[in-house]
Length: 121
Image (cartoon, rainbow, N blue to C red; front, side, top):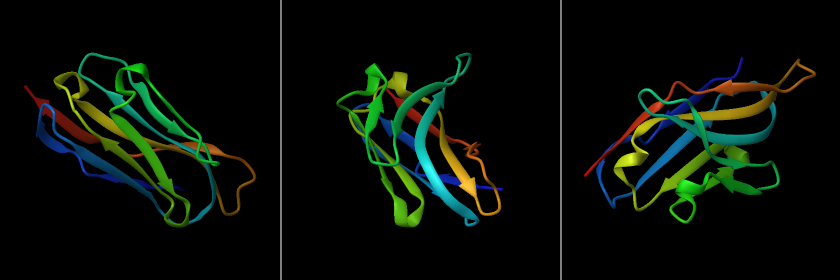
């Protein structure tokens, strides 16, 4: 199994910044893509940012120019730098990895436990 451990969430004022980190546990043979999702109360989970194995990135429109996703392949870690935060960014943020473990021949989706981000106005 793959465990994804997120950190970096918290409470910040509008206009502030936070950096989320997500580290994948051992037993990983390969990670293809990694991503950050978020889910606000009463809303569906949405894709915030995605980064491919080659480093290509995509973002949902509402965070373009404010958020930046990056990864450290040597550490099996993905980051989300969030700047100019807005109250509407308040949500639980989840890390996602499309990964293959040792002993497996297929890739599967794995999720972190989520970290709360709250932006006050």
